[in-house]
Image (cartoon, rainbow, N blue to C red; front, side, top):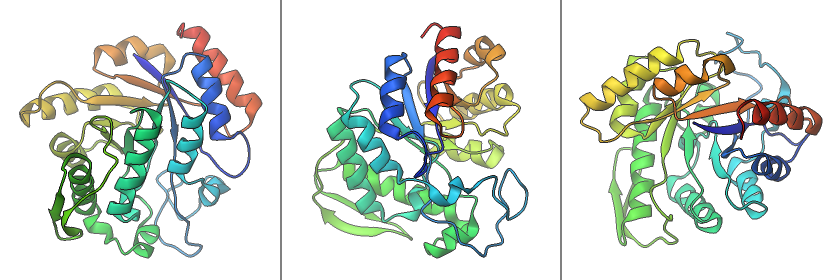
Length: 277
């Protein structure tokens, strides 16, 4: 099993590059950072954790841009994987985002994956002109369009939410950039992942990772997909790592605290020692 670290980046506390260097030195496989472009002050969307419009803390409104954060990490590391938990691709122009991600992958030597969410904050999505009830369709089209730009010499795409004629766009990624969906894995999400993505990441509120992993593997096979899905357990139970691995979980993703250097280093040291990284 691979082990990664996730931190809710903000304009306070440990910098992503500093965390990435420390994680790589301790044997971790990946670093994950989140995304929110902004948080509307007046909104109705309930937060998945609090159940209402209140936020758990103010880092949501202070989040760093994930791709710039990961670029700083790429510049000072050599092997650690660069990912998100979670990015919100539907809040971007997909042509420009494809360029950003491909550039990061090129400059990092092919170390990028995308862990994306559909988006819980309806008000944030509305500001980006994304219909909340259509956000899954928007994400599918944006990902398909980006993959066209990444893989075709003369790329084109014709969808409901994004269309463009034959176009040139380089650099191309070093290889396939995996798309992982971070969400509660109900039947609709599992079906979407099996049809459109490369895997799933649990949320901090997921208490049935083993069952959901089994259901995803079944849906994967039913969809005629080859191989197995990537499954990343966020904030896993350390006593169940063997059970996770037996169920098909490929990555354990450990939270490293509220942002302080001291706390992050302490947690990484504890995990690295326990699992002999």
